[in-house]
Image (cartoon, rainbow, N blue to C red; front, side):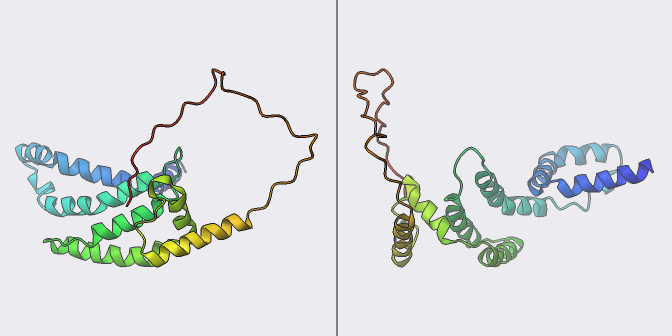
Length: 196
């Protein structure tokens, strides 16, 4: 009975182990491979690592790196990430379309590029989120017709927004003069905007 419980727990843990944790393990193997191979050679057990292709492991690790970067940025919970969906879509397309001298990398890139186009759906809400991000508000990553579609959608969203309820004259308060207050906000410094 205890063995069954341990067996189920092991497979549940394996199921819950994230792919980027496995990528970190793969990188650890690559970094330490020479040391492990030397120890096994001295112990007369070098046959345990003779079938491991470190170049293959390195290629797979390099292929997965941009996906790990995208995952880390898109899963943040303390900053907005909706607009980054579009940015990472274009970045991953760019990375996957780069030529490579390694046949395996070309095959992986072609398959991932096809999968990205089929599964990674960019909706109007993602494009509007790009517009609402001050850094990318000019929508330079889109062709002109997409820019006009996004701006039309923003105008529709604004027009569909309900009007606030009118307040009676008795409910209105006079504005507070805060010019001499210690609690005034300092003006924001202007910073240059980056555009994709």
